[in-house]
Image (cartoon, rainbow over all chains, first blue to last red; front, side, top):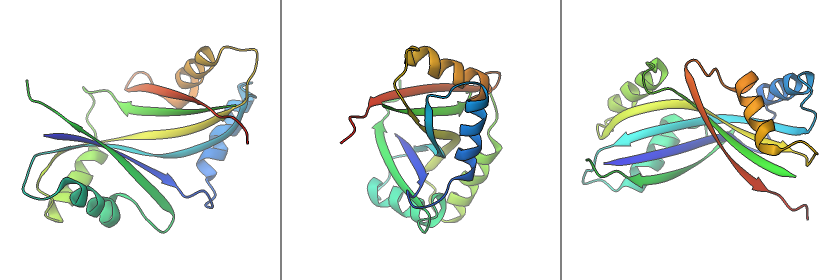
Length: 84
Length: 84
């Protein structure tokens, strides 16, 4: 069994209004040290072992459903879980 | 300057309807290996150096604004950025 952590972030060139709003809120709480905020999605997938290659599987899922690759980038980390 | 990566996830005991919906969609795309999906937020903060302690600062920001600690957990990673 694998635990796959997927990070989906807006591409650098794409404006992030949600991040801008959070930055303003942090400034109004007097956290003026904050220079930039970018907000993305974080997904934890639990995937059973199968005959399909895990990397191929995760990339397909990201490109078909989890990320919009026109405006978003994704990366992922795989962790093998040994059932106790 | 620091780059702080914040991960906000729903607590284990809290239902995640968004994750359940994504899981169903993945199953309907025939990715039946997927056993569970949990969805959270991923934030990248760029924070300037200041006299305030960074850990205290980040924890305060998370508890006051970025996470709802009643239903969400957070963790973060700090990376020091050397301006080039």
